[in-house]
Image (cartoon, rainbow over the protein chains, first blue to last red):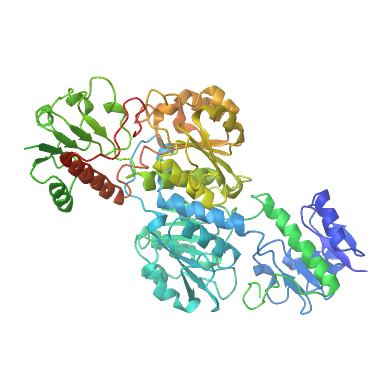
Length: 318
Length: 318
């Protein structure tokens, strides 16, 4: 009998759904308690994100189904045994994260961050000209579920959208031009908005170098709702302070939480949110996480193909 | 020979365009200088907003073509002679104002105003759950060019849109339900977003009473990018402080500028911008204003029907 450890913050209806999907298994629900290394060692299947250092490459573990889209801590050598299949929750976060990134972009285009600052000083003062999404060229870097939804929102407002992804393929609806990662340098000077949704992996670490910010328009807005490691905080601060770009909005930093003494906090033309775009801030996100977990548990037990299997080389789903 | 006074901040290309449209007229361009009552008294046509108190019901004035969408100071008795035709610049501001209102709405839905406040204190702190435009019922009150553009943006994000206007007619594309102003009370309890684009006129003054805020959902977001007089500041402050609605975003106040000692400035769940959604913050807005002025000047000289003629009863275009 397979043993399933569930570390998701489930309610009754989720328990029923997961037990239905894993008929014949024994279940261990933690209900918010931190699972011990012992409970982890007994699991054939884990649903949810356990602390990576407690897995100790357990060979018993057949399937680790994450509740996050990011898989970075689990793809490091020594965390998972070679027989463990790792799946993420790509698809659960697309709506929440893309909407957050889109709201941030429009906020910066209309200078609402500056008007909020002025409001705090009871100042009725004009911050000058603004730009329109309808006239923007938007470069979307990372064209998974989140990036594609973001692209479509921009396009619905009238933007011209260039999507950038690792592999060639058919141009998805909502993207005007489809390009490859190696073309990034040539694309940056064209963009009014550069929106990054890259996952955390060695291949995406510090993608946005000082040279790349220098290639962007001085009027460009940079958005990062992927992982903080894609840009070095000091490089971003310098680009914003030197006016190499006009403004930025980031929901992710490196490290997180951003230390209170980071110079990033005080930059007027930077908007920071504390990695809240995803998580379960949009309540339906958790429902989707449970759906993916139930679907993959059932598929795993029946020997059917799983969805969202993570590629250890890239940190993306395969 | 007709005499045309132009108080718009024109550049060379606009001068050429207007002189072309008004062939045979003599022109007086103020280039930013305040026009004296004397210069105003000599004008058969005025293009742009002159101070209302200097017009003195000049009977010589045949056409006053405003550069604003709002016409409130000019429809008051004694400002214009009965033979003067008043036209506004409806259509020039639709893109700029609707985008500003839309950005404000998304900002409030994602709590970005609270995250900006936290950022100013270097605080990495979670503001809790958010809502999605895709799940929202949006009530758009005032369905002119601005309101309709706003409606279409919300709909493109997945919202269900109810449009409210004064007169019955065909339901425009981008609106799911078309209702009349007298149905407003019944509609308010259904709305997640109430977005108001009413012009300033006696009929719209203090439309949003305490009773109407009490009819709204406690989770509702109220947006006003019409005229400040549509809501009494004390009533709005009370609704926000008592939690009758969740948040509000306003680009207009009554009076303007909002006095530095107004209690509105300090409300966390209110976002204030200083009447900047329109004006010429989106540079193309001014090009559209000049186009309307040129078109109406030429139509007036040729005796053709004018566009955007203002109804003195309502302050709207007829």
